[in-house]
Length: 286
Image (cartoon, rainbow, N blue to C red; front, side, top):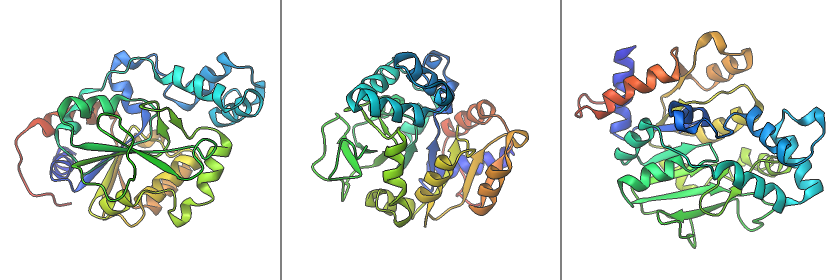
């Protein structure tokens, strides 16, 4: 397993692998305990700040839709801003990834930890965020420079690192793909890749993905991962404990040819941090 992680660390250092972060990665840093990262916690946060029916209090997308329908979009956005404006501390793994000047990083969290980590290292990065069609009708995404200045256009991008947040994020403007209707809009087009920025399409063609802090136990997470991976170079890896993998997840992993690293995220992160901090070594080859 150490040899495999050494190969993955080398692939990351060489820009031949791109990290694909799920929000659970933030749990590597204890200071982030207050953030509602998991779907159930976000649903609970929404339900505590706006009345929603009991039957949907565990479903963040349905709860968000109910708030949007009965309290309007601005109320939903205000609650989401409150949820993710809580001070965030980047885990050391994020900081190490930021030091690598990776061509592409995918982050499905709404938080700002990766922006903070990248900003601490250099200014040669740009982020592209998915946006709700309820708020932005003329585009599927918006781009921002490292200083949070909006970009007039997202293509082409001349930067070392592209941070792609497909579900949006709290920084800088608070764009969130979170309600049922938000996802319906995207899913009607995602098969033909319209919501995927061309800059992501270009950069993914030269790399594989390493899924960290991700689960694929719901249709949304599988669909997004599948479409973001589409026509990428590969290979792909996911850190998952096999005893916790559902049948649908296993089917997805097999279908997408994703190799499972059967260890806890904390263990893998700790070993990767050591390997990433080491001097460059062997050529990436799996």
